[in-house]
Structures are given as C-alpha cells and as structure tokens.
Image (cartoon, rainbow, N blue to C red; front, top):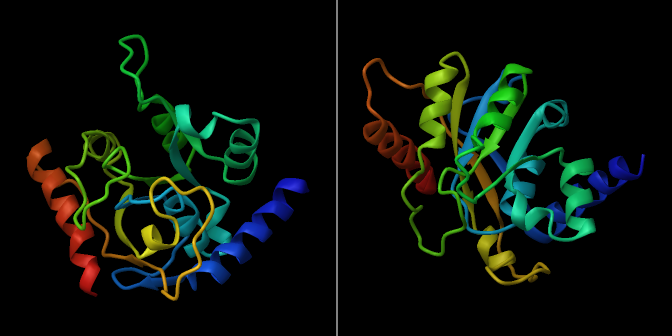
Length: 205
C-alpha cells in the first residue's frame, strides 16, 4: 500500500513540476510487449516515461536502471524496487555475469522494458552512440516491438548533478515513434545507427 501511494504521489508531482505530456505520434498505447528506448539526459527520464504510460501499461513495463546508483541508499533502493519495479543492471564489466540476463528473464516473463541505450546520461543535444544491448535484445526477441521515444526538456527541470527538481517555466514531453524491428541481415552497427536516428527524428515532431 505504501508503495502504491508513493507511486500516485510521484505521478502527480512529475506532472505538476514538468507539465508532462505524452505524445503517441507513431503508435497508440497498446497492451503489447514492447521495448521503449529513449534518449537519456536526466535521472528523471525513468519517471517521465513511466508517467507517460497509461495506468494499464505501467504495471507490466519495467525500467532498466544502474544498480550502483539506484541502490546507493535505502530510499533509492526502495523506491526503484517497490514503486517502479525496475530491473537493475551492473555497469561493471564482469566476465561471470551477463548484464542482459535480467532483461532477458523479464522479456521471457512477458514484461515490457524501458531502456536507455546510451548506457549513461549525456549532456549534448544529440544522444551518444547506442550500446549493443538493444541490438542483442532485438536479435533474441524479434516478436517484441521496439518503440523509439524522445524525452524533451526534462534535463532543464532536473539538470545533471541536481537531486531536487528545479521549477522552470517549460513543458516536458515524451514523444513515442513508430514501431521498428531488426531487419533481416541487418548488422549491429547499422541497426543501432537506425535506432538512434529514429529517436532523434522525434525531436521536431
């Protein structure tokens, strides 16, 4: 119950602070298994996409988050685990551990994912190069829709280094694009570049 109440509180807070708008430009919100992938410039990105999804989709959609940051304090650990039901991944290279394993398990269980393919927050207007994880998941789960998304202006509300949102007169939005899939014979470099361009194309929609 406490986690549910916190979820409602955060949902209202993010909408008040950011004027968050969900723009389903390339696809409607549907209860289908999907991987949502987006640009990443703020810790608030996770909450922005979660808040943009309709209530019936939030339950089965799990964000992917860095274990070292989001388990650093008991509160961060609780809120990401109990409220957002995130999937923790390790950013440390460990030959004994496949960082995609918990994502693969979640997809086998029927969950949808929220993924930030840059792997870390950027500070430029354009996303950094995408890492291979999105490609590997697309290769293993060709039936799952890949939905690009562009998160606009949230870095102005919560700039890098800030832990408390900064009230500014700007509207934030999440624009969802058309579904895409890995094409037959498409190599990793070409796919990741196409996925990155699909995200960037939503900036001016």
